[in-house]
Length: 182
Image (cartoon, rainbow, N blue to C red; front, side):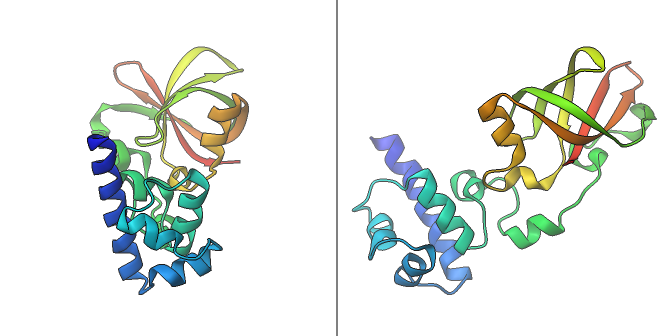
């Protein structure tokens, strides 16, 4: 229980930090999130061991953040910053432009995500039009939002339509940058 306890303590600190930023009390957060009386204060004081995923999403929404940030501090702290954050694929991967041989046009494709790391955006893709598996990187900041299309695709093993840009490296490798859901 020691490790779980320390992880929960870190999450509690992040919830408190967002509450302070939003100038919100535990009672106000309970009410705004539609939770029972003292739900948040019981969690913050340690009387409640952990928050369910559903409650974490409600709290994150009210506190203008994401469940991922509360759990891992990955991605922007606020949703406002998340919606402003549109970056190029080369900025995300810090790719040396000298190693890029060509950049394909942006196109809409039906892609099957075979595996994905929701924290980094790295993924393995299958494309109906191309044979084999391809390395991909999701550079769409929506990946940090709860219930995002990428996480849903992984949960249901469905294909999703995405906007991709194929970048061919001098090594001959292609990396597909997923910039948005279509």
